[in-house]
Amino acid sequence: MSDRAYRLRANADPPPGRGICSFCGAAGTTEIAHIDGFEEHGSRDNLCWVCRSCNTKMGVVFKRLGLGRRTHQFNPAVEGAASLGQWLTAVLSMRGESGAMPVAQAVEMIRATDPETRSAFAHSIWRLRRQRYGPTGRSDATPF
Image (cartoon, rainbow, N blue to C red; front, side, top):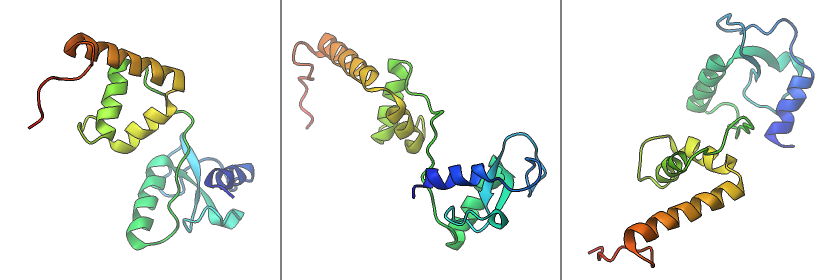
């Protein structure tokens, strides 16, 4: 079963009580956490309400202590690049040529950008390169 399926199962049978963080008492943006750090253990006695901040802190502590299992979050709310500037920032960050955004965030943005928009960005980049370097789109300068 996937990590997403485990999360959906936990949300289908939430822990008792209102959505208030069990650790800090925050209300509002709470989510369901697995107390032992394993999403496979979805019984109600292993679930509790936590705010996003406490859930993140728990994940860091679990990782440091070697407890639980790291998951790859699927976040459908991530939006793709809306402009060529955003696209280039993400690409350069992912390639390690810029520190403008974390690599993980850059990868998420690139993945969330639909293929047609990616293609349009590629065409824009090549058009700009041809304007700058001529028909080949390559710099005439030797790299050494």
